[in-house]
Image (cartoon, rainbow, N blue to C red; front, top):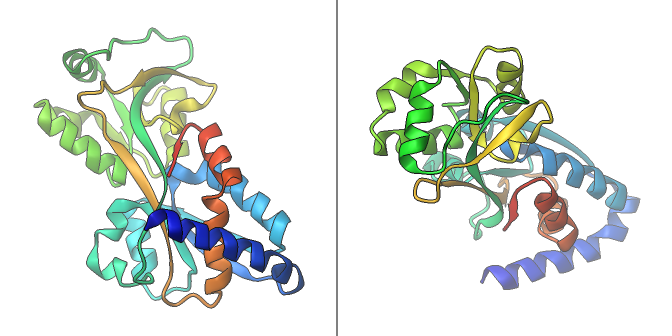
Length: 251
């Protein structure tokens, strides 16, 4: 079902491209902060190709839920699957199959040049986290939800609540480590590729969890065809190439 729907969307994109050049639309997108890097590049490509203009608002899972349900205008979402699991939020999108756009796992990073701790096994990761004085992350996010489950599983949930320095967005995670406000960063691996950080590595396979991003069109979109065309472009070979280049796995 997903393959045939993707093919349909790709055809729609091709059909709409010449039309959009004559009658450009403005699309409002809500999106998770973890997919910002590839999305910014894909948006720029799509705007050049179609003539449409796109405005993206990024947020954590609670913020995205509020954006979708507050009554403010938006045309589509590219958000973590957890957002769609909220029933009132899901009703703000067309009742069509959700399309998986990308997925990415969780990892650890330290300041560039700092010693890299051992996270090669669940026990090694546990000890590294317990030894850290402070950890930069975003508890109020899809990643934070997954981390809470991992911490609970290895028996350090209470300690991690005390050590974690909550950040408002991915960029602030990096800055917290660079400025010395946190010893390590624990978040999505694609976010931790800043040259000022050194990636220690992904979580051990036994503990690894992935944040999955899905896309859907808003029920209140004033430009549903253009919104569907953007999703088609997002899932096209060109879009997938950008997603892969930014450290994520295309859907």
